[in-house]
Image 1: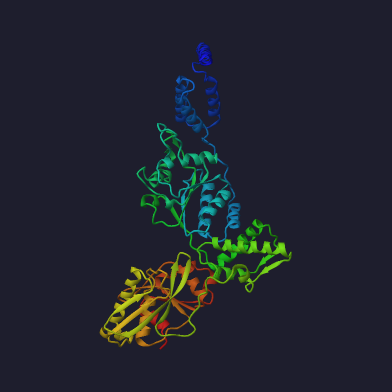
Image 2: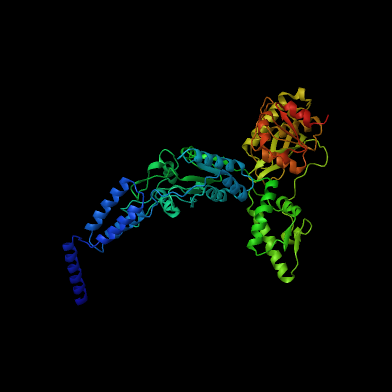
Length: 551
């Protein structure tokens, strides 16, 4: 009690001395330090006024109270923001292009958009920074390209993962009235970057949740709007902060879960799955050197031949990106390290000895049918891991007019089947179909029954297979087709043509029938994909049947 009394007496004495000096709580020196920091920053007038009010509050607060520490935390947070600080941007278009090409193979649309932005940036002092949204399957390089873009532009890079966020306060911050209040993620990211014009990557924007605490995607409406984010208000900072100089890049696997008002603010850049040719270049130029370095191997100690890489892509992976491909190359490197510790000789991985490193093949390459057959037609389908070929089989049986489709197909394919059947029955005489539909069963099957299939692009394939089975005319084995059918026999356009054509090429198809309205999409197919391939532009079912059936 005596010690406590003595301490109290000394504190009261100190308080009296400070009052005589004009500093009631003894924080004058601390406030002067804050003011010195404030002068170093290029703070707007309203921010200076706000902090001066906080300094006055700090003077009046009794020393050692909780309120004093809350005010100090607030001042520290405001002064740690890079008010007016900008990182120097790159002025060379050529250098930016070189960095993007060095770091990533392909992705031409993204690179072109970034170079366009940089060109405008050099032409105009402060253009509206675009809010790009890279949409594509996992493993195609969405996150890594953002890092390269930051390097190419010479900006600070900061990444914010949004997967699973369900609280709006995570984005906008908590009000200071709450215990443990802190700024939101946007302001924290700006602080972390140390500049007011960073490249901010909003990763997995399609995986934000929502609950009773609010909808975080609604909080992003202000952040991702060039007109509004000039005065972005964080609940904790309680002052506008200019985000218009930030370059936002969002990534998403799907647009379906992004609310429409938020999607409207984004400039969508689609990244499709890599083609086998692109995968080979990525493996040879990026993944193999990276894995050799990570496993401490020299180039002279392990060589992976081109044929071996092609075999890994075709027979060991089925993916849109290159993550599994990288893991398999890493697996080869690890086995090579073990072998070299036992026997120090150079290792060459070829197509013949690949099974020694990776085991038996997991997938078998698609091939065309060995001969022309009746009632079997090869269709083309788009999947999340690229294009693939599908065989459509038809049997005509004696029965009582039943029509069924099997093979785990969805509603859209059932509709295509019914449209094709309606067209055939309405034009039976012109097509040479002479069967009694009332006493005949038609069974259509799409193999690999365990794999779900759906989509509006198998209509003409089903119709061709049915006409072939009903007229006993064989279908050419080296032909494949994609397109939707109307009940009047019109061939309607489809999507994903590039992936489908490359799948046909891989299977050894020589002729591909596509809807006439998809003709402009042929320009997107790389030169090696069009080589030695014949394309038939079909307007109606007659064009399809003329080119596919053998009379």
